[in-house]
Structure formats: C-alpha cells, structure tokens
Length: 105
Image 1 (spheres, rainbow, N blue to C red):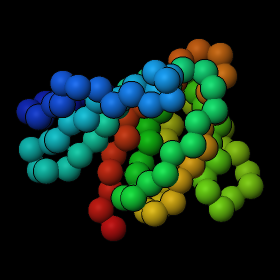
Image 2: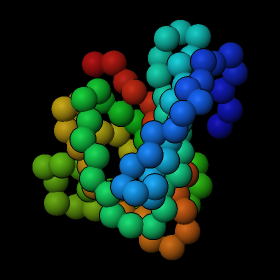
Image 3: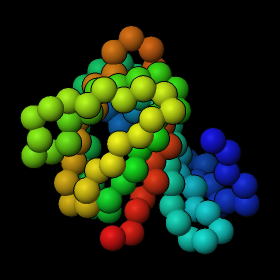
C-alpha cells in the first residue's frame, strides 16, 4: 500500500510500552489513516470512529468487543471495527504491520 500527497505526523503514537507504534497521515480529501507495527502480545483498543484495519504483513487474531469468536487475519486481509466499540488484537510470532482507515458513519 502506498499513499501520495499526504500530510504526515512526524511524531509516532506509542502504546503498550513501545509494543505498538503508529504514525498518522491525512490524505488530500481530508480522510485520516494511521499505519504501524504491532509486536507479539495481546492488546485492547477502543474506537470512537468506525475503523478498517488492513493487515499488510504478518498475521493476528482479533476479537471485536461484544463477540466471543477470534478472527484470524493474515497479510492482505482486513477486519472492520464499529464506532464506539473496541477490539483485542493478539500477535504471535512475527511482527504484524497494519494500515488503519478511519471511516465516517
């Protein structure tokens, strides 16, 4: 995945003692994305806006808040998270890389 003509935030968002690192960008149309890496472990994130998480490298297991089933997500796949919700992501083995798109409702 590549993005052209964006405004990028130079300062990273660092979560969980450095185990999740992301950078934000704003596209020409005003839409926002973040992208980064997730080191092995289990992490919970809350959402305000609906999100689409594209996994660009590695793999993970995801459980959306309010569900019991973990979804296996490999590279070149994605999962959606509703607004005002959250998800637990588990990475085992290699680092997982992602692009998060913030969706309008």
